[in-house]
Image (cartoon, rainbow, N blue to C red; front, side):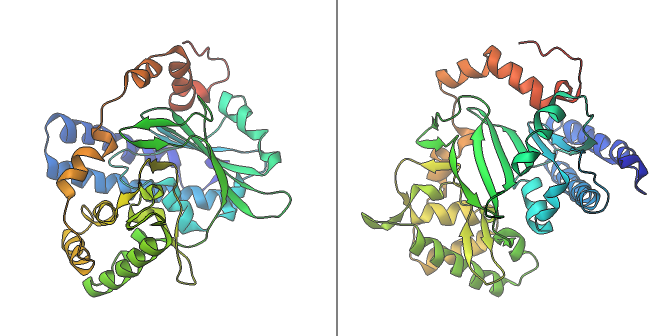
Length: 339
């Protein structure tokens, strides 16, 4: 079906995506040219937005009931059915291009009907499922899917894990919840997207309202100066602003085992986004700047893997699952997935 479109996806990818990925690796990693790395990451983001826009166009205008699409890059995979067109484009775009994704460039393909991944997922469409996401985490391969409930007609997001399902894993006080109750899809813009192109004054007003929302909604019942550990992953792209002007926090996959300082949320939302705005909000709420402490103790990418995690990462089970979801193995029908 893709071949019948006016755009040639594979030509676009070969000319831009693959070359960009090589340049990012050469200049950004080996030569450590940070300015060039940032420039390439920006170019990669632009390519990814164009790819996602094209995918959404395919789904709305051309996709057939029996087709599935695959959008993938390093350590992340999306599989989509035409019913993904039920999602608002802004949500679709932000969901497909995760915050802080860096310079990885998506590859867009149509799943072959004889492939492992196609046969695994096409049968799930009858249950109302239409979008599946797999991501390599420090402790597991996470699995999320979006579906339309056949009883109430509402759209829901579900989170789980393809390995060690139901067993939460801990990293330096944070818990990655592999099983979460389904939650309703909320139509709207992420706070990060909404703040784009706003004036300095407008940004302050909007973020001030966001901070007021989270301090009131997630106040710790035992200590009013702290907030719930559920807000551990509270970056601006995890808040949805609805058309009615209400904020909603949407990502509970990562939680902290204890209540959090209010200043942690300000840090996590704003420190690397807008340092001037960060300082103004801290001053408004009379909070201390503790970014050095949070960067040392709270950023998961800086925390070492436990012996248990290292053991699992090197296990046959994990290697087999990684091959299936993040290599060409899952796209083929006759390949033997070796441990």
